[in-house]
Length: 382
Image (cartoon, rainbow, N blue to C red; front, side, top):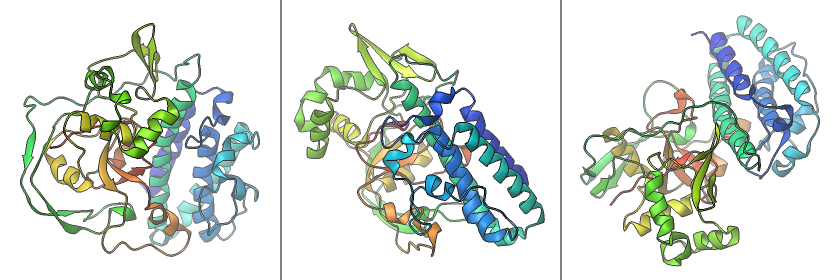
């Protein structure tokens, strides 16, 4: 696949994700973490315009200089921007305007790429494509939150749920103590937070080859898990009480029956389905209730060679920190990962809405411990 073909494929996929939406769905921001679909469409376009066209295309004419303020996400080097909480307050640019912006930048990118010295921009192009693929997953999770928190429970469309395939042998897998290597090494793309490959020491541990399912978690609820502080971190218990938490996101108890919002709308809870949409606090509490714990990110990376993974992002006990030798590149691109390495937990694996290119064993996702709108799950170790 040529770089132009890859570019067209990624850009087309993003727009296909939005095809089932009504125009009103594009502008909603129900919580700070959820950005309006319109903003995702504009921001991913702004990325190519700002980092590729403006820097390398000599004759490029900026589509709208005001869009730099509207669609900059967090790049202090680039300048001022709309604060994150206000993204859903903007009725303009309209959805139609944003699609015109995408069309303009796409056309200019294709013209540029046909004549460009690709070796000069290859790394930036690959980063830009991976950046948009990350936003494709965020689009899908944000759209689910927008629709799932509507009292009408509108369906997004038919989208098959992916659950972990249970292995024939359900015994915990024993991993011996020793010195292991972790981190990305080799050809192909990775994010800077996956570097550098380095050695770590692990004590012996055992890992469950199967993720926790809905039936397992319902047992925790029925056993009073949300009412017993002893299972929770202090911050987690404070979160439970502040939010009247009682179940995973999208679970609804209606007249004694449990239901779950899916892309197909509100459905009866499938007890055998892999648990989804829980935060770190809940994952930790469930593990404590079971008398076990969550893996560290390094335990996960070493053990993942021995089990099926990829249906859920799996919470780990690891704080999101730089690896030894982490090197932040100069300029705005250096703001991509490094400055977020505080007060966040690492998640490993992938999910059913993760782009295929992002499902690799060294990938380090990260979120604050109270967030649960991503496709997150639990794997236990002891």
